[in-house]
Length: 142
Image 1: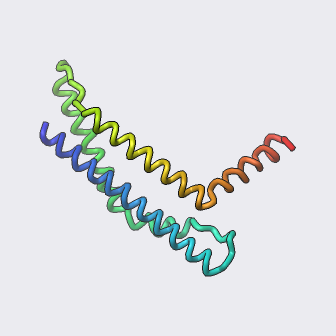
Image 2: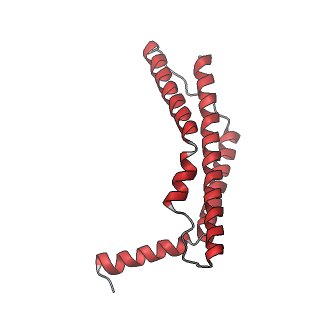
Image 3: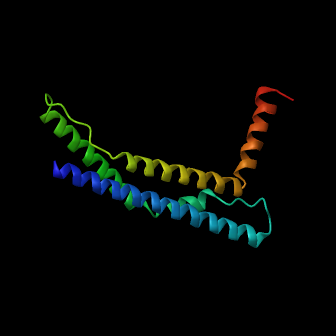
């Protein structure tokens, strides 16, 4: 049972590290794009390009691989434990209500921050243009 808990803890740490690395990489890509936009003086210069994103995110491949290996180990370990104790009833782990409340609040805060960053980046205009094009071209309205 301790091996299972240790694997889960290690997997949790790697998932948090992967998420942090992805957030930092996205912020770096955004900063590079904004610098390129400022240098050219053109507001239509794309902030995110496939080349910049591919170069930045490909640096994180060892972290992706380790996280996937740990996830597979947790899944295999969980299946082994379930097969050994097929007739035993497993209890759901106790999670304090306060912990879930803080986790939800943190996720809502992250979602709100990313929505605001998308709006400030001009993503709202992109969505509007695409929606307008779909309505006028594909559906035939207007």
